[in-house]
Structures are given as structure tokens and as C-alpha cells.
Image (tube, rainbow, N blue to C red):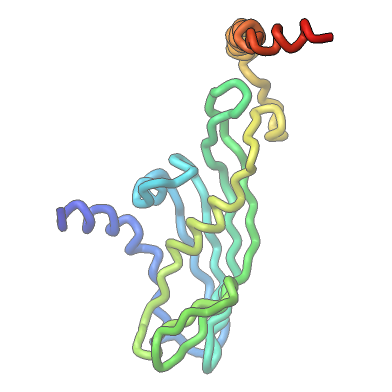
Length: 185
């Protein structure tokens, strides 16, 4: 069991930024996000993707300010025709990392609190959350903007199946008790 956990964490190890030896000021980091990144998260909405994350870290005396820019494509399943399609992603966010004596929880979602003894900041979960939050609630090929059309054959099959189910539902809703009430008129 322990070996399996280590294998899952290994792809995420590259997303740790060591900041202790860096001078105060701005520093640039680039990360490639591929399918192995999403495989490390068990219940991810996104299973496949090819993304680049550019992180600009502004190191200050008491905190780090991370400017995050994620660009690329993720593979999604269409809610209308059930086929997979590539959806473009372009995310720009800011994350603040503060230092404290004890690891405290922050009420602000934009602030992460680290222990002063820490020497690295792991941004894998931050990147994961930003990517998953950017996934649209309703995913449709045609609304993607890259000219991909939904699979018309599949839509026709789904509509034919839903029509039969709707007709059966209408015939089953005729309750004999309602018929008895209609006679009272």
C-alpha cells in the first residue's frame, strides 16, 4: 500500500518550489502539466490535458506572492453527445503564502499559511484546484469555440430513446384513482 502512495506522489514532487535560498524579489518558474498530473488525483474532473503553468513568485520578507498563469487544453466529455473534445484553458490567478510560527488555517481562500520552518511550497493542489474550477458546469462541444460540432448521429439516437421513455412515462402516470375523481364532475 505504501509503494502505491509513493508512486502517486512522485509525479507531483516536481511541483514543489524551494524558496529558502532565493533572494528577495521576483522569480520565474515554468511547469508542464500532463496526464500523469491528473492521474495523481483520484476523483479528478479532468483526466487528460496538456498545459503549461507559468509561476511568477515575488519573495518578500514575510510572504510569497504567486502570480499563476495556466494555458493549454484539457479533454472533457460532452454532456450533449457524450464524445470527448479538447477545451482550451487560460487561467490567471494570484495566491499569497504567509509564514507563521504554527501552521494555521486561513479563512481567506487566497492565502496559504506555512510554518516558518518550511523550505518549499507545494503548488500541485493549487494548480489542480484552479484547473478543475475552470471546467464549465455544462460541457458542450459546440460551445467550445473551436468549431467542433456535436456528434449528430449520437444526438439522434439519444433523442429517439428519450422519446420512447417519455411516452411510456405518460402512459404510466394514468392513475386509476384520478379516473374515479374525474367521474365526480
